[in-house]
Length: 213
Image (cartoon, rainbow, N blue to C red; front, side):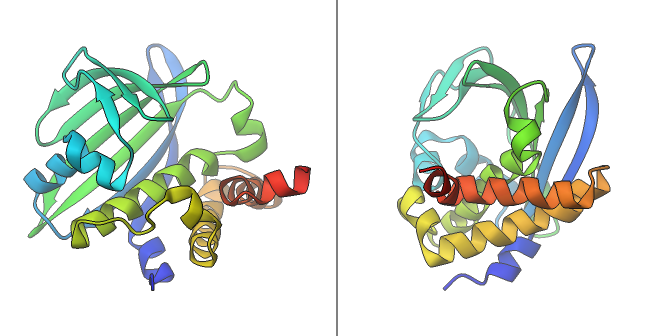
């Protein structure tokens, strides 16, 4: 049984803005320390065989300038790679382009991962769901990575089935709640932040589809 409060508390979450290519973009950052070393953490995040065990199958040319495609998800171009500490790539999905940055560093005897997703807000996602939409997806990724590093497996087998389970709904609800104070601190109205996080959780758990049916 997953210790949900412990898992939620293990991830640091932050929102911000940055200038990228002369434009101001929003940033969603998640960071977590894992009980392994940087080389092993890098391998888990970049080797095809290991990626598909905790994330999704990834195809393409995994080198700087190469294109990648995550099965059933985003694709893009790898724009920078400095093993075992940094990886940058575009994140292209649904006709929109955003960017991801992965940073790894030693932290005592362990290794810390920091993932930042940079994006514009002039789409249909931000007005309805807010930053939790991006953040909650990566929360699932980081917990999957934690389970993989712990025992080589996955915390939830088939992700869609787990998200609809009682444990999955409880985790996603707690993760959505964790994004509320971060969103408020970034300048959102309290009720608005809670409403957006609630819609995001409903989307990830399938409750939104059920309510629309």
